[in-house]
Amino acid sequence: MKKVALYSSADPTRRPGNPQGSPASLQAGAPASGPAEAPARPGWRARLRQRVTAVARRHEKLLLVAAGGLFGLALMLGYTLGLQPPPQRLTQGDIDAAVLHTLNNKLLPSMAAKAYEAIRPSVVRVRGLSEPDAKGEQKELGVGTGVVIVDEGIILTNLHVVLGAPRLHVVFDNGHEAEADHIASQPENDLAVIRARSVPDDLRPATLRSTRDLAVGDPVVAVGFPFGIGPTATAGIVSGLKREFRSPEGERLMTNLIQFDAAANPGSSGGPLVTANGEVVGIVTAILNPTSQRVFVGIGFAVPIENAAAAVGLPPF
Image 1: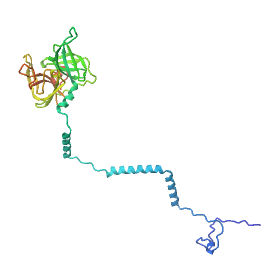
Image 2: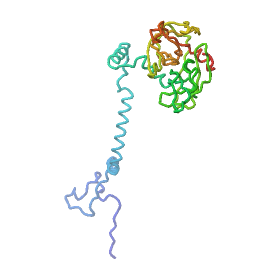
Image 3: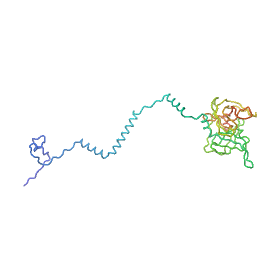
Image 4: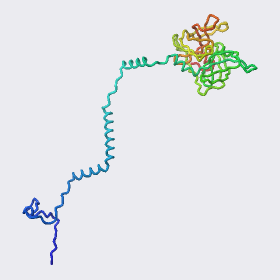
């Protein structure tokens, strides 16, 4: 019977007496016999390197984006933790220099300009008119100024502006015109309260301020319609407090008045006298002129706003 060749799973290169595992044929110089030797399997470090390389190739773009994000985060953290420059400490000299630079290079609005802009939306022109004649025409019996103190159209003015006029007409800052009704009087202070029959949607009443801390020398601005021209602003100071004034006819003595030197003329009557902030401290009511020309010579009078507010029924300050 023919014998079948058997192959062992042991290393065919090892033989007794050959502890280094060198092929016997090589030791003896004979040609090798049997199957070819298999290549050695790579070590674990090489296999790990191959896997990492393969993953990097498959996800190259994603890894680049992630790396960029990490780099940006590192920069941000570095800036936050100490790379940013320390905040500069401002000295009083720096502040003074900045203020001086602004004053030298930028023209700031004057006190009078700021006061005028604050009060202007509340100032109205007041006209006393006759009844229409056969042609429908009306005569102007009086002209003056008023100031809105309640947004429902409540207006303070002088009594002598509206007294004896059967019809009243007011013109608001935005050009809105309306008829008005005389609803209250305070003859001892030459004050009248009128109400407009219609008002603008954006009507803004004036801000009233107590005269308790008003002092001689404080700047003031008078706003009105002198000789029907306006609104006109004139600036001056408080010249005196608690003054008295007797009307040219001698019929009425007014007391506790604010004396001021901002120009006022016929038509200014009933207008507001305001502080540098545009807050009303008085209602212009009279000018002192020893001649018969009735023009301003440097002394005007205003009723304190406390008296004027009482004419409307507003509580005192």
